[in-house]
Length: 316
Length: 225
Image 1 (cartoon, rainbow over the protein chains, first blue to last red):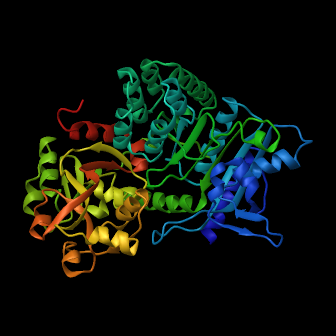
Image 2 (cartoon, chains in turn yellow, red):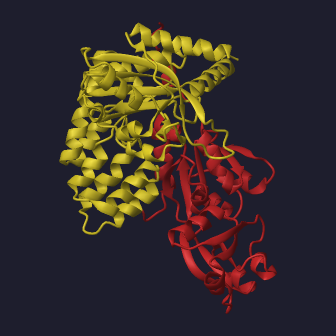
Image 3 (spheres, chains in turn green, brown):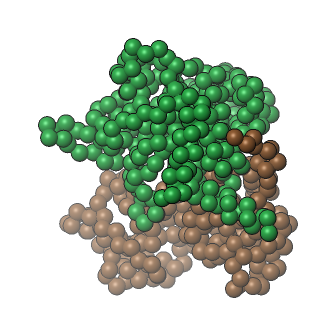
């Protein structure tokens, strides 16, 4: 545990240094509360009744509990709120895959700060947090949750074909995506080309130019949002840490606009993620733009160990 | 706090690691590698070694069903395996980046030729007894078509199950249909089609994007784009 505690202390110090005070919320919430934040909590992995017969659920992340906390318990305080946490969360597991039902998340929520500055600030904190963990090779993927959905709307795609396309994209199945797009009747050649080209567009700021060439309102709006965020990141000196990714689609229901994923070359799994959730607070009665990220602490620990091992290997 | 030096971030981690399937897809996988200029002489002659360095790639050979495991964990950056394998392991988080078009076959429900046992099972017992190496594909198929089935997993020759009375039907992969015919079985329903697929690790797909895309383009079958 000593290494893990040292890692958590380093993460906590990075959060504190940027003015993000730590908060704690109960592990167990009313299932209704979680469900108001994200409809998919209707299928939360661990649900049970309390002594009065009310349905409770174990949280699977900290974002909804903190949104509830801010909307209901901090009503008199002036935003923006800078909050951090290191806390357990719970999820269903696949049998015999070495997954844990309980895991630790370390993250921040910046509530009351709109894009692009709010997003850039949170990415700057994320970058400093990764450095504090010794993961100075880790990179942040920056995408846009609304891009593909708005694109499908622009092309007039509704119902089953739309769901099938989003389902294949969320599953990272680019072969299936092409099949699903080709099943759509009467789709213009340009629309088809745009839908199939975007998921592979990732890299430096030049991908925004390449995307803009595809044309269309949805692409125009999303690339403008991403460009504004990228410029704010450049002004803060952290844009070299970011890879723009037009194919990113995180499956959490509450994201709007910017979405984030964290990668380290020493580990095959993502280290964490996040994004903007500008409509979530409103569901708890207080309209505030918000953005945050969460890192998986156990994975950070593995990546740290791997980085040290690979670093030694190279020194030899 | 130390500032991050940019050069450390761009550090390459050696050649891309590619997981290759020994088995039915093996010969055509080697042909595909030949076409992109990877010398496969050593791969073809040495059946005992597991890792080969050639054509600027690190090639690892394994069972097809292990390929998604290695790629998901990042032990391989990319891998080649059948769609049948991916359908059976839907929880693996990997990018499916390219249909390689070879190794075409069908996943089917088959029963004894000229035999009504499968229909009788449904009518009289409420569900069929099905043996398969693909229990999850089979269960999903019956669930989606609103039927009940007792799915029995076997590891070896699945055709033995209906011959011996273990089950009345099988869900299996069929290429030519010869094995089915030789064992007195016939196709009743087609569940899915399968070809060889190129898959990529989620992190490699992002951090080594240019190299991954380059390999995808080189491996793309002729006549596609």
